[in-house]
Image 1 (cartoon, one colour):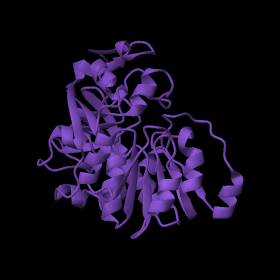
Image 2 (cartoon, rainbow, N blue to C red):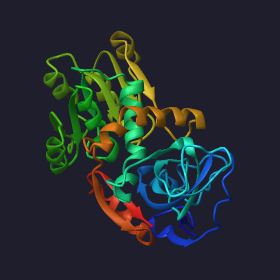
Image 3 (cartoon, rainbow, N blue to C red):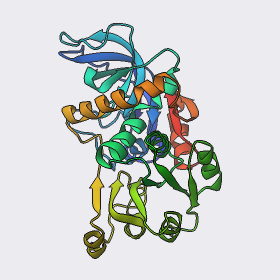
Length: 328
C-alpha cells in the first residue's frame, strides 16, 4: 500500500506519499478498511513537526486521525460491519494510508448520499465538538456559547450542534470573511479578533452582562485570560486547542468567585473504551441529522494524497473555512 509518510520532522517538504507495509489481518473486533478519503487536522501538522507524538503502538510516521472507506476484512468477533460496508471513524493515527486497521467500535456506518470526502470531514470534528460542548460542557437551550476559531472544522461543527440544542452562539475569527460565512450557517454574533484577544467586553455586552455560559477554546494560552473575563458565573471553559501556546497565567480568584469549571479535552489520548463511548454518543445524537442532510460538514478543499505537502501548506496559511480532505 501507499501512505502519507513523515520522512523527517520539520516542514511540509518532509511529507511524501510512499510505499509502506500493509497492516496485519484484523483480529477480534478489528476491521480492515480501504481508505477512500481522510481528513487533515492541526494535529497532523504538529505530528509532522515532532510536537505531537502518536500513542504507543501507532506509527509516528503515518499521520491521520479520521477516515472514510470500505470494509475489506473483519476480525473473528467483529459484528457491526460486513465486507463492502461504508464506514467513517476516528483512530489514533495512520488514517492517511490506503489501508487502515481499526477497532470497529471507532467506526460508524454512513449512507451513500455522502461522498467519501464529505464522510471523511465528519468524524474527528463532530465527535470532538459533541463530546466537548454536549457531553462535558452540557450546553442547553437558551445558553450562550462562545466558539474561538469558529471557521475551523471543529468550530463549524460546534456551531451546528449548538444550534440544534437551542443555544445562542458567538464566534471569533481573525478573518472577517470567515465570520460572514459562519453567519450564513447560523452564527448569531460574529467577533473579529484580528487585533488580538480583546473580546471579553464585547461578549459581556452581547450577553447583557452575564457572560458566556460555555466557551469552546481551540486557540489556547493567548485567549485564556480573556476567557475568564468573558465567562459567566458557573460557566464552563473547554480547552481543546493550543495554537497560541500551552502556558497561561490563571487568575484563581476569578475561577473561585465565578465558580468556573475549566476542562481540558483530547480524543487521541483516551482509552479505546472512552473513545468508543464518544463515538456511540455522536452516532446516537447526530447521525440521524447527518443521514437526513440536516447536518453537513463544510468541505473547503480536496487534495490527492500525493499532494499532501501542498495540503499542509494550505492549512498553515489559515485560508481554509472548514475541512481539508485527502483522497486516496
